[in-house]
Length: 545
Ligand code: NA7
Image: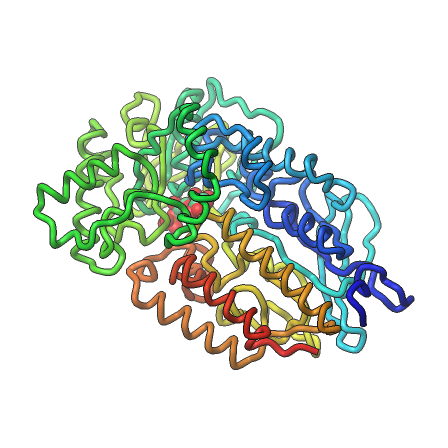
């Protein structure tokens, strides 16, 4: 096979595509651009009606990224990052969606993307060395497309979790899930609204909903830590300074755990005096955002150190929320940073509004949802609308819902019955020519997703070029390499306090989901270095033919 064989599709037995990409979020868009540029015949299939992935679906009021806009953006094209104008420190969902559309326009991606088309199944044909992918276009007849490679750019938080509360479907008013928000504006003016959940999506949407609703009742199962975003319009001088050396900022980010630049941590919370420590936490609190957890190196390793940060946030809640009983309920008791830290704008302050009420459903469990609202222990709470801010079947949910069958008909959902097993979070033994962008076992959700996506896209694209260069058509992660990687991912997770609580990182939010810490917790720099070494060693740990 020569260098252009994939691109030219010369023989009649060749697959329809070199690479079939599932999903038109930031991973899918860049994959398409990059693979097309490398001469591959690639095409994106997307269930939604447009590009943007997470940012296409999560349109709830107040939706905003918790990584700063100047860092939460592509860096693969210098002209793009120079031209695009972010206006706020943290971009709102409509701006991020506009950016995704701009990228699709700018790189003329539209002709090679098909929307409102769900990928229902992908079956590996070992004899032909290709994937048979079943597409289900909305309102159209299903069809099968063949592809040499199948690349899952399906996102980490894309399958909504709708809790199985008795009577859920009997509710007479409108229901919403934050991750499936309607495209038409939703107006809560004058309505009694119930919000179930107090994760990031709830914490962002509650202040916005409270401004409209006549009455807002929040149903909280677990109190959550949140720090203020301290969002603000971007200062043109600060933008100019970043753009003068954008590459420098990006390169520095790649040396940081989460792949974004924050002030470096001090070594140990316990080594500082209480006064010095509070001053440091206060400085970070005033700076705003995820930098708070970077105050000290030991916050996620030493429970005593962690307590100092947790105490600081609890004191802030006590100071902010006027009703002591509400403040008590809002104060989390578990490890701070174990669940993803939330970043808010006026969340705790919202509970001082007369139209907002908090129900702790551990103290007063939800009995059922009725036609007219939510019935808890001893009380029926009337509602005109219910917002489920109840999160996602994270990291594996979407992949396990697709009928993915590898060699010998092995089902991915069976292979992952006891938890996801991958090599580098990129490939799965038994599933040749399948790649998972930011899959379980990669840093993904513990890092700035944009550079992590770019790193994976470039690794996969380079890999496909290397295969083409060698005249190879099939690549598969070896079992031993995968076992070694899974062991390494678990060992790292066990050393961190992050694996100790019931978070979506360990699948605890989904009934029956095996408890496994899914993302790689060793940080971006170590991970990217390992991926590069493996590629440089001729794709060590992969069988290639
Ligand atoms: P999360 O962070 O998973 O939050 C979901 C929330 O919903 C959380 O407070 C859950 O409580 C609550 N929940 C889930 N199921 C139920 C039931 N059955 N009853 C009551 N409450 C429930 O999802 P988000 O969408 O907020 O954020 C996801 C990520 O997006 C976030 O981490 C950022 O990365 C961006 P629990 O804590 O499980 O007790």
